[in-house]
Length: 594
Image 1 (cartoon, one colour):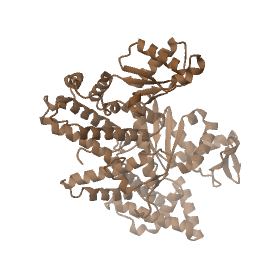
Image 2: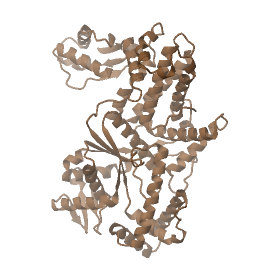
Image 3: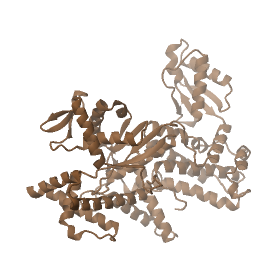
Image 4: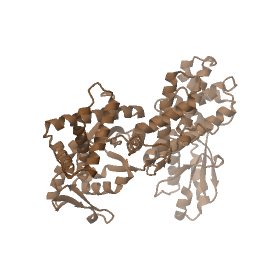
């Protein structure tokens, strides 16, 4: 990346001057193009080490850099109190276009994490319960982080952790017993089976909260039997409901584009369940009890977080009945992950509401497995909210992910219904635009913030939306398709070596390097920064800039039939590559026709 080239030149200049930067050298894109392509304040930072003043030091650094005649640098200017502004050569931008076109599938990838192994856990819906918009948030953010981490060179595995035991399951099974006469047959559609599970859970939850004491105790007994698998009839219903839920979740993952385990045709590389993490966590807690990491209190086993950090609190890891709580299960999960896939880093994507909880659990793990605890990073996200009156829950209690996608899709149909498209084309466009609109709305803001989903803004084709990016890609692609008969060389050679090697020739006589060329090459550095900051919104902002620059280029320049047709087609092709690769890292679907 050109950033690294410039940093090397700056360090060499400092070394020649007998200076060394004690902190990271900051090299940023200039906000205004007239101030160059990159800017650094290193002379201001190192001013205290010299007696000349920052402007003189900047001049000395400039002189040392230019003495080496780096081919990428056209000019260096000193601005303000001592900023160094770098202007890159036209040849650099042309060579960047060559790189984009010669590596269309890989452009944007970096080697920052080469040789490292990473696991990203996200989504985590619980069998027997609905896949709601909280799970949707986790899935979209986790999927994008996984793509970005992988693009930076790490071997990346995706994981999903699901609560297949616990009180919520006992409530659902109580309802299944009560509604056993209505139990769906094997050939009934999956959607009907899921509706039945929803009714069963609602019935069990109501009985537990508002029913008789006998009902409540019955659900508690079911909860114990689930752990022990001691009741054959209960096991039969449990296995059936669990199977339905997991099968249903896979249909949602496919709609969202989460599909990484191709061998088994499943979304995730690893699936972890509380039924396996419970025993593992209980063993860790019992070992910790012997080491006085935990202590007993009223029959339960607890961890005093405040003893390690005053901002933490006390939590129960084994309840009075001797069963592992969520806390103990998370300890077991960490251990099982490490055993099943020894990695350098483990990311866990969940809602903000468990941020303090997670800190306590990780503090407890640190006392037991300090090395493992140091590898785990919690990525908490905000909540997805909907404007009042825009949409009601299908169940009356929670808003499901599927219902949100369906409602957004219906609005897309309204927008494209009059277009001259086949039924199949409308279906594909509506589905992909709906998914893209939702994903974009979630990823355009920092991960920790709550998001209010606005139907109209999310589906706008005018900018700052998923459909705007999707349409920009489709528009650029359509130019290449139209140009097929006008190209002086066969279409399949457009990205061939002969054509790529002549980009310099094609550019001769054209207008000066514009905003589009100065954006396209930046994708790899944006991908790296998005990983470093765990911020997909960096990539979103960048792609919006690229789309805007191409739309402006498209509006102000004749492409097909112009004297500069070949070069402008190359620029268009590079744009499609950058947009497609960037959208893929966000998990936003691309379309060839809109």
